Length: 202
Ligand code: GLN
Image (tube, rainbow, N blue to C red; front, side, top):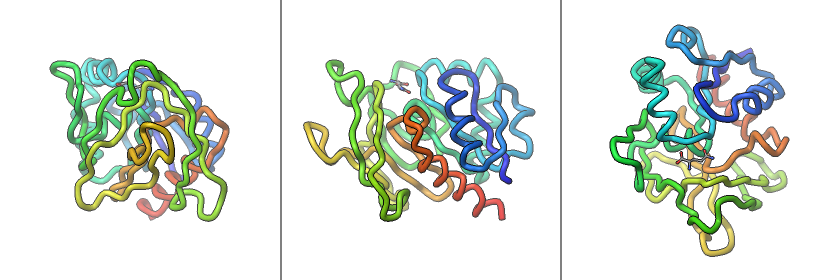
């Protein structure tokens, strides 16, 4: 069984641990550089990306995590985690940096101040096969404003003022969603990531 880390400097760590274990992975919470050793994949949870950026430096995790992701460690970022994986961020706070690796431009808090959080059903055929849509929970979420070549769009908003906005992407070993699949009890996004990890470590 693959060993998947969950970055545990901030955010909803426990929910990701539970979803990954339900998907058949072993898990380890990651707060120190040494805890990156021997991981087969890592999850970057939601939270607040500017705070997480500061904490990553304070915990001396930023450089080793960047290096690991750059060397091909599969990573899944949700919400703030998506921002951490993005190469470019719009509406970043001054001095905010990301880990990068994912050739996308994201916009922070993109859905507007009035709509802090909302839910939507998303068709994600690459993730669900022919199954039911994924109930996506967005909480002060970013969207993906532009994608580079080699980035697959896995999900877009279907209706409303944000229709057409990209909210799930994959580029090789990197997966990112604007939303929080760990809070719904629907394990399919974590199962998809666990399959990515298994096929990359075999
Ligand atoms: N708005 C947050 C940020 O910019 C992300 C919110 C979340 O992760 N739920 O980091």
